[in-house]
Amino acid sequence: MYPTRALRMQPSRALFNPAPKEAHSAHTISQRLRLIKKCPPELIPLGIVLGVAVGAAIYSSVKKLTTDKTLRLYRNSPESREH
Image 1 (cartoon, rainbow, N blue to C red):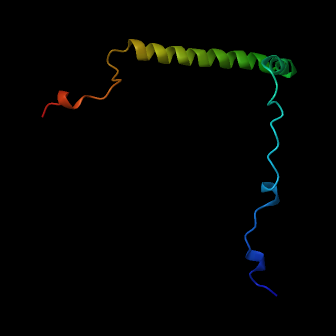
Image 2 (image 1 turned 135 degrees about the vertical axis):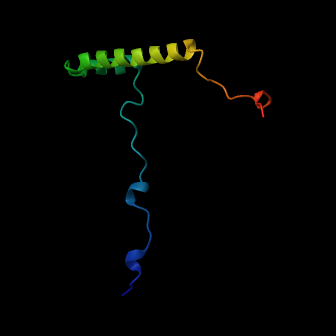
Image 3 (image 1 turned 180 degrees about the vertical axis):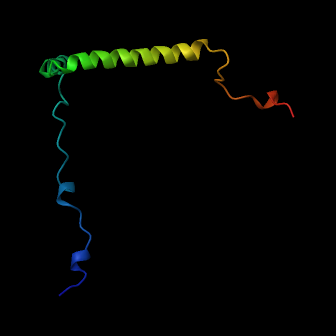
């Protein structure tokens, strides 16, 4: 009997086989757009609401960054420090 036989390190069998290719790797944009039709109709309003929420968040963030004059966007330069 070999007591260390069970502790022998071996690569798993899955590492010997190549990874499977993605199912949609060669599809064109039009083929991917056809997949939207397979989407359940109950999810369409959810997608619209989510899109509006993300759009509003981006709009308000950009507006805040461009209009707020008290917002500090850059570090203070070393020569502007007063000691």
